[in-house]
Amino acid sequence: MTRIVLIRHGQTEWNRIERFRGRADVLLDETGLAQAKATGRRVAAQWQPVAVYSSPLSRAVKTAEAIAGRLGLPVQIHAGIADIDYGQWQGLTPDEVEERWPEVHHAWYTAPHAVRIPGGETLDEIRIRAMEAVNEIAAQHVGQTAALVSHTVVNRVILLAVLGLGNDRFWCLRQDTCAVNVFEMDGGEFTLVSLNDTCHLHDA
Image 1 (cartoon, one colour):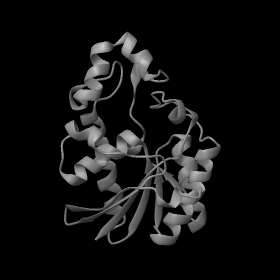
Image 2 (cartoon, one colour; image 1 turned 90 degrees about the horizontal axis):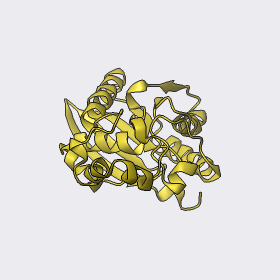
Image 3 (cartoon, one colour; image 1 turned 30 degrees about the vertical axis):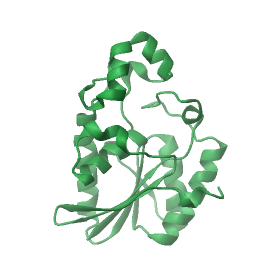
Image 4 (cartoon, one colour; image 1 turned 60 degrees about the horizontal axis):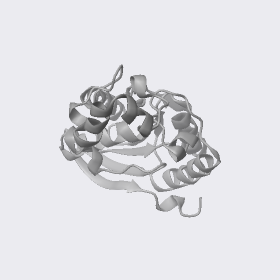
């Protein structure tokens, strides 16, 4: 049995005011840095992963460093768990997107699995690359625990795959900043152990 501890990065200013982040390299804010430290303590103490992987974006890397540093491990960058490419939406608020692309914006919140964001990715494309990354990492750590730090969109899609659900259920999962999810892999089968756990942030 292989265990994956899947983590969302800490808070950024663009989380707080709600902008489409995607591949923009937005830094953790003060709250996000505190969340990352609290997450590092929790993950290192409870699961002792033997490897820590991160999206290439600094908000994820900084969160991963807070975990890896407690374990004396390097952070390994994996492009497969990079955030969604929001294309022309990147950096805009939902209201700005609604004004420019009203039909696509509406579809994103009602039928996300059917949407191609202008100049960006579909959820199906994210699911392919993200699950390839999960399977590759799991194959390298059979019988061990690995931590992955990624983003809300990618995490939701991975968790839907773990649960055997389609991307049409995208909005049925929450991924709060620095949430921890745990699932196990055994013989190609997945078991979800915990979802969107943020109890370690109560004092962060």
